[in-house]
Image (cartoon, rainbow, N blue to C red; front, side, top):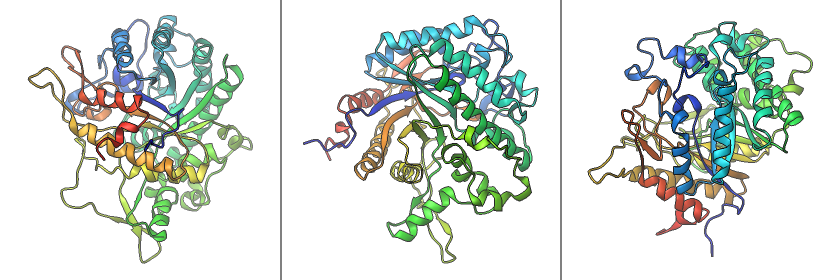
Amino acid sequence: MSRSHFPADFVWGVAAASYQIEGAAYEGLKCPSVWDEFCRKEGVIANNDSGEVACDHFHRYEEDIAIMSSLGYPTYRFSINWPRVIPKGTGQVYADGLDFYDRLVDTLLSKNITPYVTLFHWEFPQALQDKGGWLHPDSPKWFAEYTRVIVDKLSDRVRNWITLNEPQCFILLGHYEGTHAPGLKMPVKEILAIAHNVFLAHGESVKVIREEAKTLSRIGLAMIGRTFIPHSLSPQDIEAARQAIFDFDGMEHGLWSNGLWFDPMLLGRYPEGYYSTFGDLVPAIGPDDFEVMAQPIDFLGLNIYQAPFVRMGPDGKPEMVPLKTGAPRANNGWPVTPQSLYWGPRFHYERYRIPIYITENGLANQDWVSLDGRVHDPQRIDYLRRYLLELDRAIADGTGVKGYFQWSILDNFEWAEGYDKRFGLVYVDFETLKRTVKDSAYWYSNVIKTNGEALYEGL
């Protein structure tokens, strides 16, 4: 009798993003993205690293796909580098840049690997940033034009699309806190205007895919699945965790509220707390804006790695519960909290009633090649096992989870952290670019082959 609750059609896969793995930053006529420019600034990236070479996936994609195929990975989520395809962001299309993704898709399909294409994973064209970036009122049209180019080229073979990856991050870290590209520190009023434009860009992109794709498409979003774990199973603590995710409690907390980031695109409205929290900072809302933003989509992607614990405080508001001294942590400092993969999907499914995909989950680890020539990463295996068991429990309790993408297939450029934090199932020597398959990659292969049953071995 099977102990796994993963449905027979569950989508298992791995994920990556173009700037983090491709390299070839100035190949041919490609123009810079905001990340190319940001990495040129002194001291903003650990060790002054950049994605200029990264994993050189642009030149080594066939080798990387062969590795995925040998491991039996059925699905690959990757992103397209906007200025590689349209160097100035709008206008002239660079055929050679577009052809790379054409070859990538063909190679995946030849190995029976299903592509999931993320249209925007932060590779914003610097030429458009110079015109005002996402604050420009035409930015939704720019994104729709770019979507049209990709859909025209790939939609005869690609059926699965993700419009945006983590708008919370590229807007708040990139434009408010300034720690990510383009490295700006803008006032809240402009941040809310940018968010509004990004929601419109998502909606316009969905409309293009629906109207112009050559095959029946499935469309989703990949969002930070910002989650809080109830300290106990009391109804009060569960409600505290739900409130902490979606409600507004002051401006700084409100800027990260999932009510702000999810509701416009999934429910066609901003929550009441948005207006009461931000008041006259709220952008002008056009008569058709919510209709555009809330185009029907097929799945909600959640990127979940960790979450804090909360309980209901005596004032009726959530209060944080500190981690125990010496609690387990990943190499980037994030706490290891497998319950986040139970509560995150559950809370979002309850609110939005849309199929859930875990579009990112994984461990930043301290990996190296051992004397035997292999990479032994038992911590990653244990981490993934714990998290996937919690995801299985969520499914057993009625949460509609339909897919899981491990982050990441390759060790890669981890944004402001440079190359210090290794998330990959495949080890990359960043000097020689040699790939070494880690123990965890073989383990994950067996999880997929058994549709999760291997998670229960020995339990």
